[in-house]
Length: 104
Image 1 (spheres, rainbow, N blue to C red):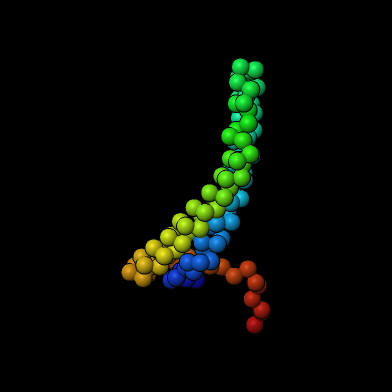
Image 2: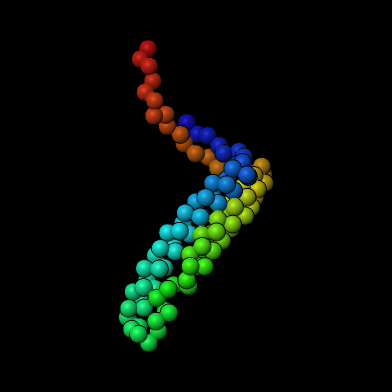
């Protein structure tokens, strides 16, 4: 059975993407810290500050920046989707019920 997404809630999509981007920012910070630690070990004692991966500030700011841009671009994407879906009819999806139907 085909269904069409006619409209997307702008505020809700912005909130959801803000949280998702925040979580992705945390994952990226952890990866960057692990990589920078490995590079610091390879660089040796010549570059002792190299292993801090931008410091504590980067660990705090990066997830917040990701969250901010997730909210901004989530709202922008939802708004633009609603305009385009109004002109073209929206995205069609095929949904299947996971609830077994009662026997007749």
